[in-house]
Amino acid sequence: MAASAYSDHPELCVKDNFNSSDFKRRVEVECDILPIDNCVAFTAVSHSEKAIIISYRGSLVTEVLMEVIDALSEKPVIAFNGNAKVLEYFLNAFNDLWFAGIKDDFLTLKNANPGYELWVTGHSLGAAMASIAATTIATTKLFDADKIKLVTFGQPRVGDHSYATLVDSTIAYSYRIIHQNDIVPTVPPSWLFNYYHHKSEVWYNNNMADGKTYKECDDDENRHCSEGAIDLNILDHLFYFNVPANFPFAGCKDWNKYKNA
Image 1: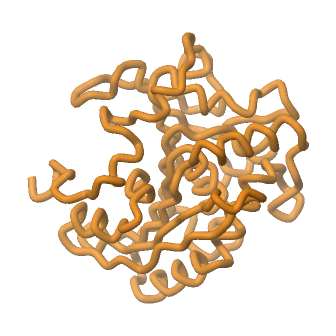
Image 2: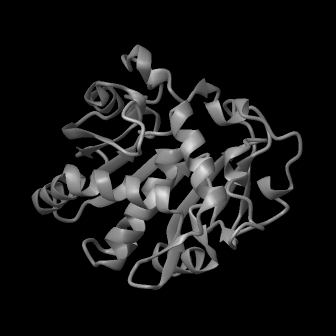
Image 3: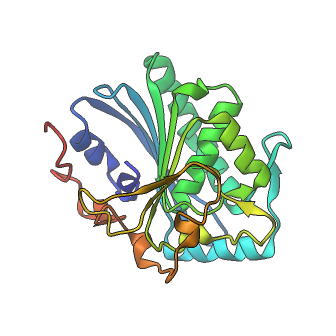
């Protein structure tokens, strides 16, 4: 579902991925001073998995540049009623989408599907927004935190130590999946303004092909996982589970080999 957010028609990906599902809406907004840079998210529900889904699209090239500029030039801003600090670019992008329709659509799906879980996901910039979304929903009591599952791919550091502590204490089911030497999870650097990852990390120190092993580090930062990686590169950020992160650009028909298995 994280990769599906790259598609202009994620409803096709949702339909192909689940035996029974409903697509709610794709929301797109301008998310920085450059009009060509838009942030995207969609909402859906899988009845076969009994889960409401919020998925955030990852970064475009120019958006990555804006994220780096913001991280290097501005201190993280206070959020969550003073309980944490996060990178302002990520927070603004989340808020723009949240109030443009994602919040309303989430609440509609929640009310229509009592008892379902909430799955929140994203890749790259989308991972950062997904982290903030899950934390916002949990801390404002919009959804039972014990039924929220946050799974991200190639997530950058979203906030400082206080944010990591807040996420760790609020969302029990939280996993950051990282591909080998992916450089994006190393930014912003931890020495800058006290940026810090929240737990837990699942690190594939390989090409993530079927059957490959992984290591789980159940703390915030751990040099036994990706924090100790060398030869950092961008290519590992672009490929997760042996497919390009933006593969839905070409459509999603029949891509899910696990469906009906």
